[in-house]
Amino acid sequence: MLQTTRFLSLSFSVIFPFFFLSVFFSFTSKKTKMAQKLSLHFNHNLHTSLHLNRHLHLHLLPPSLLRKNTTIHLTNQCIITSSSQNRRFEFLTACSVQNYDAIDESEEKVQISEVSSKEEVKELVEQSIWIQMKEIVLFTGPAIGLWLCGPLMSLIDTAVVGQGSSIELAALGPATVFCDYLGYSFMFLSIATSNMVATALAKQDREEVQHHISVLLFIGLACGLAMLFFTRLFGATTLAAFTGPKNVHLVPAANSYVQIRGLAWPCLLVGSIAQSASLGMKDSWGPLKALAAASIINGIGDIILCRYLGYGIAGAAWATLASQVVAAYMMSQALNEKGYNAFAFTIPSGKEFLSILSLAAPVFVTLMLKVAFYSLLIYFATSMGTNKMAAHQVMLQIYMLCTICGEPLSQTAQSFMPELMYGVNRSLVKARSLLRSLLTIGAVLGLLFGIVGTSVPWLFPYIFTPDQMVIQEMHKILIPYFLALVVTPATVGLEGTLLAGRDLRFISLSMTGCFCLNGLVLLILSSRYGLQGCWFSLAGFQWVRFSSALLRLLSPNGILYSEDISQYELQKLKTA
Image (cartoon, one colour):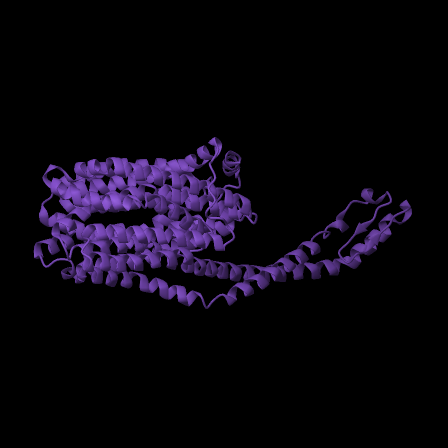
């Protein structure tokens, strides 16, 4: 249980500041009403200014325009009616003289109104950014828990199984990789769900939201059944190929774990789609409650089945299966409480399937390229000796924990941006303001995680290993480790904004370019500078992703500056 204690201490040190901000921001909701009142006052002043400026120059009209019967309104509502040509100059001149003072007074009022309006606009912008940041923190706080539940359950399995058999503990490694990596490959369905649900809600179309949920639930169920049969037929073969001929004795134990967990594939994917639908509705508390209950069930089940009943690795698998089934049911119930039917499955038409595929395929390519780059990183590190491999494993686990805490910024962008880009109250100005808020929070989180994530292996390396050689290797890569970590939260926030804007072509092409370029850099630097070269390559990979996404969003032709929404309308027609 020592590993569990270490993990929880690290998690608490990372998450506590964020949840403190959540509680602090929850007491600032009164400022929203003040912003609304100022907005109404600003609109009234703007209307008054426009009314005062409508006819300031009518006294400069040439007399020829007044020869016919005409009615002209000046600023003080003086009316000129020239029924004959004899009075056309006299009355116009008199009215002009009478209105000259009124015009000067009006101009002074306009100038005063403009000054006060600028001050009010500045105050409104500041309050708007503050309100956005409050909403982001209140949403991402619980969302961090969603991302931590999975690693926490895997760590509980590892800690409990490791108390019994070393062979089963070793077998748990390839077994969890098989289950978790295959589950990660279906994350494109979750991203597509939250994107489509948030976009439909932005148009205030509940029927379209329900239809998207029903279609995606059917696709998730179909994929889950396919994975169940794949696990039954090819699970043992895949594990044997993964472990290699020297570790064949691990395959039976690993296969028993995989086969039991494989029974939960349909519930796992259906539950993940229900969770993503709730996140698309800006609800992160409902899924968090479900996963918290699942984690408790998993922990209690592991202790009872493994420690007291002696089922070993099979007991851990049954406990995980039960927790996933309960989580899927609770997430579906959370959707039902919002007025949607989470148990309705709709077979998609050919056009609908192609529409979902056009959204999910680039996301799938992006996810697989990320996995491929991290796999290359691990591959090169394993060829550098035991000490460097051990140091790399420790640093990578801390790095993954910190980056997981930054992932909710991507989900935040996908949940909040569609309303501002494509909604009924479309406002690219507010979307750009939201992007600034995301970048600000991403920079703060990146600096926080960078300091905490670097301080732990630097100041407390004995938490992970007593070996001085391994500790020295860990300290050698602290600089590139910090550089890679500090930019990650802002990067995922920018990429989430691109996903919300459905700039899918750029996302897939840029990730392909990043993978090819940094893969080559990784090959060169790892051969010359060892483990330091690997981590500098990872830092370059993250910074290239950040730079390309930021330049794309700041481009005058980007999704946050272009008023042309034809791309989205085309996607809408395809979906219809």
